[in-house]
Image (cartoon, rainbow, N blue to C red):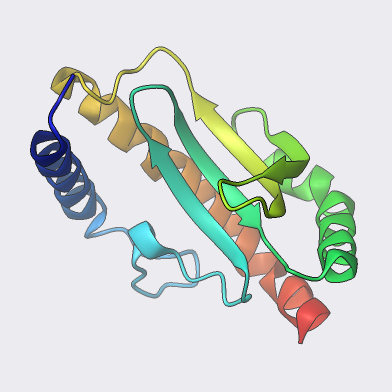
Length: 154
């Protein structure tokens, strides 16, 4: 098990390498984008990359405090399900009701990489390739349909 300092250094090295790996990749809109902090333009929705000793996930989290807004947003996503899943080259997992560490209920779409270990540096190119490919696939979908989602909560 790594110490807190060693884990921090490991994380920093991994994400710096990923940022460098994605430096030349433009969004489907043709613009530069901060892939690590993807701009969803919808408050309370987040595109997250989870990379730890247990799992490697690309997640689209929906975390509205208002349960009604959460339900409407989730319903709109399910109406876009066929289009979204046709853009993604791996299965999309749909979790409408998860609870985070603060006890808040949220919805999550996620894509998972199996058989890779974040703590094995030789797996980093595989993890980078996974994130790159599926971030870009999600981005193609999101650039086409984000106005629907943005206007839904405005």
